[in-house]
Image (cartoon, rainbow, N blue to C red; front, side, top):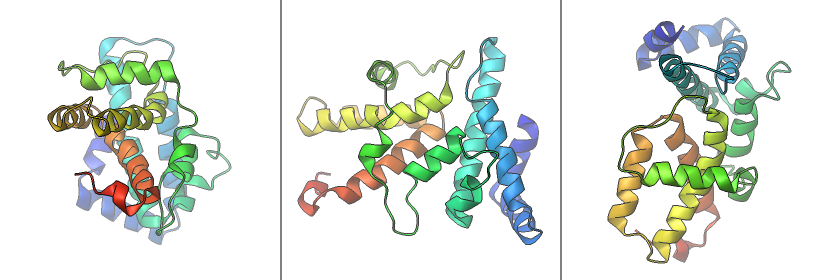
Length: 204
């Protein structure tokens, strides 16, 4: 499955698949299948090292594909199925992804965060080690807690506890791990910045 999804994701191939699915009325079903794959790979009860890496990649790639579909064909395309309405992705995209100039509440996006898990993420984001744990990780929880971790980093930067170089290093660390993390963080930042007054947006 991972090989098939990776073969599909180059931009032209994926766009052709989406266009064909949309033209034949199968885009909704295609998105539903991707959500089911994403949901299946968000957590596990036991796995070896390589299996955990494969699961992480499957979660990551399906998350990105679904975000692309939501941005190009609308959130309803991926969030309206009765079969997947309670899934992590359908909930996340409905609560977190801005659409058509309509922004979501950044506070709502972080209301489900867990302080202990945010602290673990902060330790991983600020670590110079490139390794990112994948075994037994609940990826939906990582996505849920990443925005609050970044908010803590922004506040530390604003009050001078972190330098600009430190922040850049942290963001580079985040970008080098899982693609879904910068997407979740960017979605939160987009909504957060939109809610700030003009003067508060001026910090470089």
